[in-house]
Amino acid sequence: MDIDRFWNIIESARSSATISGVLFDAALVELLAGGTPQEILEYAERFDEVHDALYRWDVWAAAYLIGGGCSDDSFMDFRAGVIALGRDWYERTALDPDNLAEHPAVIKAASAHVDEALFYEDVNYIASGAFERLTGNPHAFYEAWAEHRSADEQDSDATDMGEDFDFDDADEMHRRLPRLARLYLGALD
Image (spheres, rainbow, N blue to C red):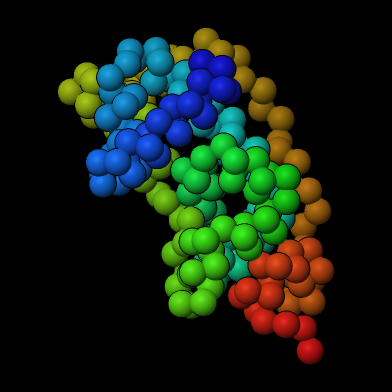
């Protein structure tokens, strides 16, 4: 599955969720379960690629501001939530995570002092849910995934997360993510 097909699937599920009123993750599971096991594995492969590409300190800092803190597990959920926003917001975030200061859900959450915007854990498990729906076996995905990944010969190079910095340093956050910092921390004195 190429990257355009991946994003078309995400956008189709977003559209279906809007029209039908179901949650995005349910719409995406339903859409993928209508395909083949191989298509689900290929979706999972692309998901991992775009998910891993957001594994950077600047994106984590954005998640930290938006979430009022952000653990390792929560950062996984945040990256899944950014993917669920669709290709446009994903690319804007990948280019500069401070762009999230313009997203309506982030603006609303900041003004309401809600720290759950964009964290979407269930999106991490779409492929396994679709595989289970298709096969009826809750373990089938993990067995197929292990086989698929071993045949794929993945690089094990460590990810370059960029420059690490102190998320609790308000001045640093204002310097690196000025719009998000204004939303969540207020103006600098």
